[in-house]
Image (cartoon, rainbow, N blue to C red; front, side, top):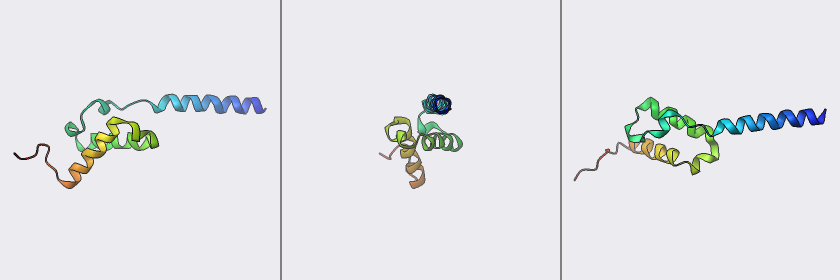
Amino acid sequence: MTRLILSVASTVAVLLAAGCDRASPAANEAPKAMSGPELAQERDRCRDLGLKANDDAACKAVLQERRDRFLGKDKDPPR
């Protein structure tokens, strides 16, 4: 019985781990070019990554873009 439980738990863990590395289609797009809903979807993907989001370059870019939009920063600084 213990072997069955361990086998099922191992299988579930492998399946969950395999699904965690999938990136959304918007992950290949620059955050500045994303619409509000696309940016929110990417933010949700990063939230679901948990601590792995700290090592994800796309998540860092999305976070910076959300900050910039919140603070009203222009895409191109005035010259």
